[in-house]
Length: 98
Image 1 (cartoon, rainbow, N blue to C red):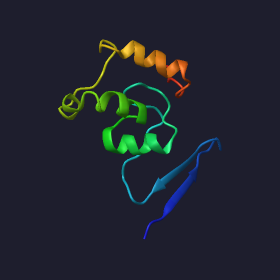
Image 2: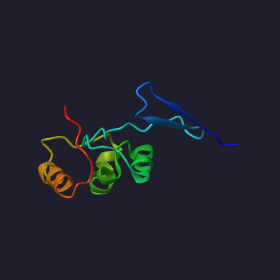
Image 3: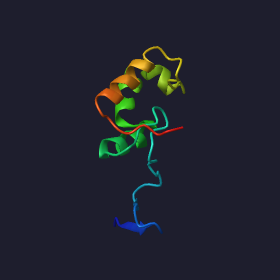
Image 4: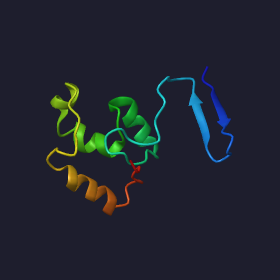
C-alpha cells in the first residue's frame, strides 16, 4: 500500500511531500545546470540520471557512453554556454545563484 506524508515548514511557504515508494529526494535545483527542478519530468529524470529533464535530454542522450562512465558537463564543456543561453532565453527554469 502506498501513502504520502506532507510536512509544512515553519515559514509556511514550502510543502514537502515524501512518497513511500522511493527513498530518493529530488532537490530543488539541478546538480548539473543549477536551474530549478519544478516538473514531474524533472523528478523522473533526476531519479533516472541525477539531473533535470532538459539536462537529461541534452547531455545524457548525446553523451550516453560518457555519462554512464561518470562524465558530467562543466563550464569548459563544448556547448555549455549555448545550452545555458538557451535555458535562459526560453525561460526553462530559474537559475540558482551561486
